Image 1 (cartoon, rainbow, N blue to C red):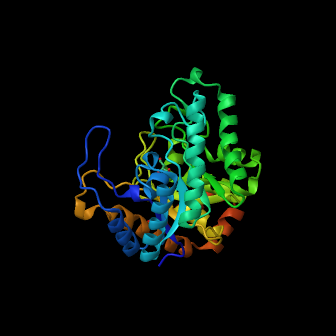
Image 2 (cartoon, rainbow, N blue to C red; image 1 turned 120 degrees about the vertical axis):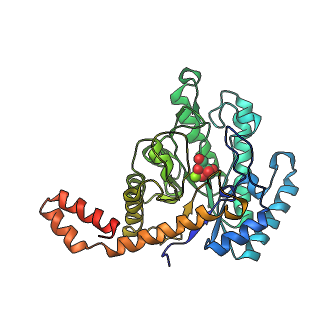
Image 3 (cartoon, helix red, strand yellow; image 1 turned 90 degrees about the vertical axis):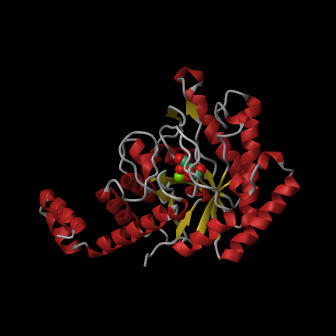
Length: 343
Ligand code: XLS
Ligand code: MG
């Protein structure tokens, strides 16, 4: 049994399409996903605005709120909570060149409208957390945007949300690249700086996705620690990533066990979850999985979290402290490897 509560996004069960080929599995109905999520052991759902209300741009304000209320009921019926709503600011034609940082003023306004509506959705489905994954906030051609103005525009977007709703909290989920080449907020340090520079720093924090940190050449455990140190780790998306290539969203721990161990160690040692935070997953099933097996990556990731929690509990802290005091880090490293390898 884990000490954590887990969350998952509906996009974690998908049809298997990639940039080189179309769907390989049938679409799973939303209610069916919820049922399976609950069975696997999740207690909350991560939402994009259009996961709450599909085709949101084509619907009226009253229709949107009615559908949000229906979603809240569906969650209640399944005994699930909403963790956050993140405006999907990367698919609409208005977001072709970014959202808050688009060079087109009308498009920037589209981003703002859609974001404030996501705050309304948060209220309606019972959460107080808005997520910013800045998919296209950066450049494909570096000279195409003023990089100082770009960062200031991100800050302006954050402040508008804080002003709009006195209770809403915001997390920034940094990622260095993909789909853009250079992000304006590539790491947790950038996210923390934006939070601190905002009008209400207490309500702005960060979410670490393991793979995003690896893509930045950083250790996800270190990124989590950085945000924890200043009381701003609002969430995590555990997964894994084999080096610096396209975003893989592999099952947690599938590539780097020591890094996975250290993420759980940092979270456990610093009481992550004690203020109601969820351990979120953001993992994709392999394209080769059949429809019947398309939930395995979720169950497997939770299993690895639990196994790592057991490893953290089994650490011989007295021995580790003695080795640290003796500055015998080779011996310390070996004792961690033995712990992980069960020797
Ligand atoms: C994509 C992101 C996305 C966010 C939510 O890389 O991880 O899934 O978690 O917008
Ligand atoms: Mg994520």
